Length: 338
Ligand code: PHE
Image 1 (tube, protein in one colour):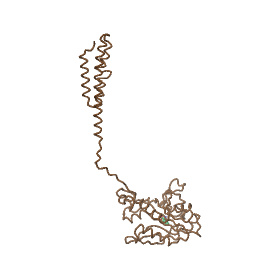
Image 2: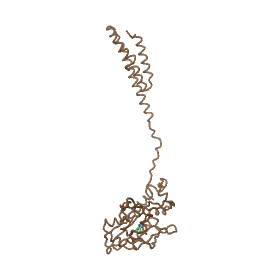
Image 3: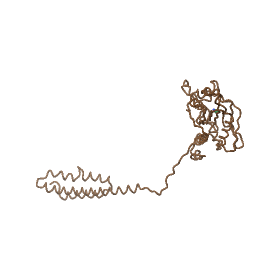
């Protein structure tokens, strides 16, 4: 016999103490390979049975079998214990303290220009107007020609207008919201009452009072019997809604190719006159180009800058604040209202 009973007992003892000493599931894995694996002393004991004479084989086979099953069941029991230990540890480590304060979630805010645009849209929707929009990349024809701005008009030169390549496509970044007037008149029959807010572009440097990307709001009314008095009344209503019920407006004669007569509109605020925008009666040439019968219909239009409106109303002195949209600036306007 190649292995004595006492040697076998030593092997079993060694295995049992290794099993008892395994502190976690990864340690017990190693113990399994060492003491129950193919190359373990126990496996070797089994293999040695083959070389025993037949009369000893049965007897010693039993002894080895008993030793194996003792080690096996100790192993399985220890695995169960270690699994229970692991589960308890995970439960403890992943415990959630529901009494801890929750992290603060910042709600952000709408950009003040968006808030103002919504406010103006609501105001004019209340007067029965529709909100109309057009593309920021606009055809040169709609941005200039259809508005009676001839090819040699200074507004068309490279200084003011962002022309877009390829130049043959005759596209510009719209320099004002007035092309939306034309789009509206081409697509709808009068009476027309629209308000057109939107982003506009001119080749200006960004400084305290200018920005190359700015916003305008355009108003257009075409109906029977529309006069300058309707224009003035609408501007008063608009200005008072923006700046307070005591605010006055005044019109100063001016020139725009698409209105005749044309005026600049100012409002009186905090003791001074502030320039607000342009306006006038829609030039009959423009109405005719859009297929509107000038015997029956007349109309007015106005357009003003939203940044300027916001700056005056809220005492903002630097355009950078509006352009940069720092969350601290934005939040000072509240989530969605004044
Ligand atoms: N589109 C003009 C501008 O940007 C403003 C304007 C609009 C003038 C409507 C008259 C009528 O300067």
